[in-house]
Length: 307
Image (cartoon, rainbow, N blue to C red; front, side):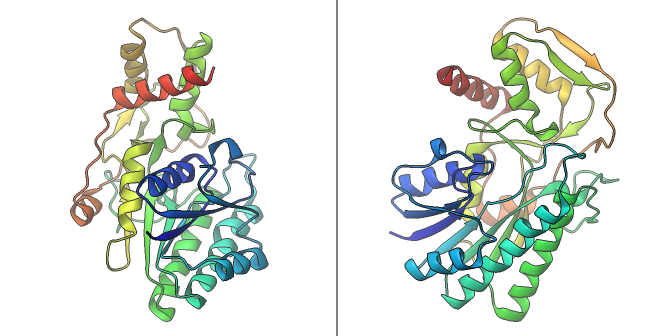
């Protein structure tokens, strides 16, 4: 049995990672300040610390209390919209918090450090699918902070011997996903469908995203804990899906036509995106297993049970 630290372990992706690790027989320690996560998501078998990765003393205490075989750093600041962006908070959580964890990990000789980054670091790419070696041009504060954290992780790896992997998540969706902006379009549509309200499509609905079901994301993330070396990976579906296709998937799942409202294009829309995942597939012998219709159906079932 190994012992792992999962930061943000009460959040959407983090809580599913905890469930998987515990079901695999491992011990899990969670650090979460519950600013966006919920204690309802906390696995009852996990050891829980209420606090932030930005609290250096708290982080030091946790590493003093436990010897970790690996760390999955999911804690992050989520922006609900561009006007709500808080660059200083992004910097504090995504960068300062990551430095605190890496310092403690090196001091205590912990195992693999897996960092949850984002495809937001690519901004609005001119060429798709996007490779890990593609241009890094983040548009939003969140992406800028993730890029900065990645740079420090690479520095700690090269100069201080940190054993790491970076996972650039695509648009992960599924049970427990909060409703935040465009990346949460499936969660937003789920809520609207269950309430019987129209689905809103902005612009022509042809914007492309790379949607990955949560269980597939967890499979790959946990797999990185045992993967030798230190690398950066796109962790996504590798498929381009338009918002119009998402609407069709909801209609197929609900077996009835849905009322759709058209709205003007939004400002700062990122346009078209999907990721090349061949590097990750080769490294882990991994492929996403869940198609969009099945993932949406499972998501709807989860939220129906919560009603």
